[in-house]
Image (cartoon, rainbow, N blue to C red; front, side):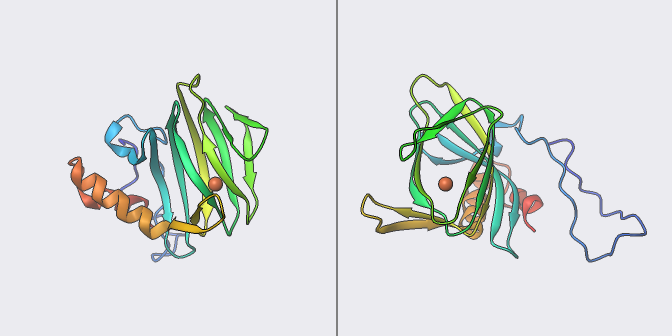
Length: 170
Ligand SMILES: [Fe+2]
């Protein structure tokens, strides 16, 4: 986290109301930065965009982890950094170095198979994660605001302080 830009200094050509840039080590050295989401599933916030209802994060899933069945009403872009994963609903496997586009309305269940130690993927998510059961009935949701709430609770809990997440909020 050493290279997070915290300076309020601005070059003279930048408008004083423009938001600060974010430059940070994406895969953190401090394990506490990973926010637990489900058994064997964590996310690491990078940018939490409250004005457009969008967020960027790393998703980390260790072997046999499952990200519950969900759909997105808006596009999702992913870039696999490490390991591999797949959707139960598709026959392809996303591997390190692959780009994945999830079109609006796409429903899927992300799994990491038992022979994969760990996967890490960058996701740029718009709108929300709309969780559904096998009949398509809604079982819950996540959006940029629930993500911020999860981060605040976790960072408070692990001693980083609830305000730790503020550096990623825009
Ligand atoms: Fe998804």
